[in-house]
Length: 159
Image (cartoon, rainbow, N blue to C red):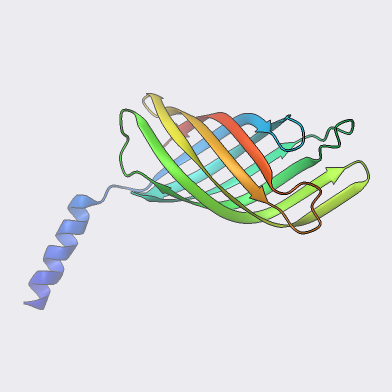
């Protein structure tokens, strides 16, 4: 009886699960804390059904006149997302942690930070999607500007 239950469970899992998917995003956006500065970056992710993981790297320049620091982040994130697209849109929530480096003139701060946010991936055609994202970064106690806010749009390739 135990063998039959095990085989039935394995069959159900095999039929109901879909293979893991990965994606790559290149993005441009804005760090809106203090003064709006262009941010650019990339993210690589993989997921299964509702749970995904990604690594993201992003950087923006400083603005000395407005005393707005440059910020570089490397974050590992967990994504909770809908298992299927709804009208070609897949919403997600994300949170994660990693390293940051903030700079303004001769002042530098490197440390450990956290981020939380969310967004949507909108299918254009085939594996090509647009990704819209908003994040809040909580940086270390010596950071010049914390929290830092970022919005971006990017091209996302699913494979």
